Image (tube, rainbow, N blue to C red; front, side, top):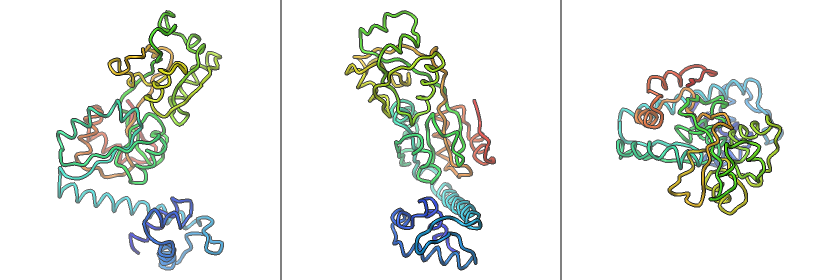
Length: 314
């Protein structure tokens, strides 16, 4: 039994039983993947996949057990490699963070700058994507950490650690009537076309529920994955924007005005996601504390190693 066989097996399962997609992801040939998996089945004396000709159609019951064990073995092998790298070169290596645009643009820069000053020889990579994509990147070992408000606490393979709470603002052009409307209400906001986040973001659901509870059905004319796009279209006069308050910068957004909306919507929590059971390099814990001082190394290590279903809350 070889780690390569386990790697091929798990990749095929991850790619919806497509051997060709797995081979492409692993930079190898389709026959090579099939041969390795068949060799593993012969060695174990079981069939891992149900076949229809050369096509894999489903996973057998013993196959599901084998794949679960293989995933744990590959995770342990990756942890072993990280542990060796950690002690061989304490301040040299890589750290990959997967995050959304808003977090990358407005929440992470201070921590990133402080981390690079402390660990100049560590290569820091930031991968941007929507919440589902970044969670999958961490679960699949393509990133060490993910930062987002959505989905992290729902992903079964990740530990979710709360970093900070935030709320929303209403963004309008200068001289907009809402600036003189007195105390801001949902009824007043609903009179105007709305530009806000895409449905991939849970905070969009928070906004929708707030309007629904008041019996309002606002007209959403445009959705976007990031706050900068929302602001662009508000400037063009398409409507009023509803977005994270942290994403408004009065010095940069000179053509726009921000109105506090924290009394209209419940606050949201940004979380850090780590693969359950993962071994983190020591400098990764430094980054976490720079970004979220409430998350000490001891707390993170304890939570990451706990059984599924346990998450730390603020």
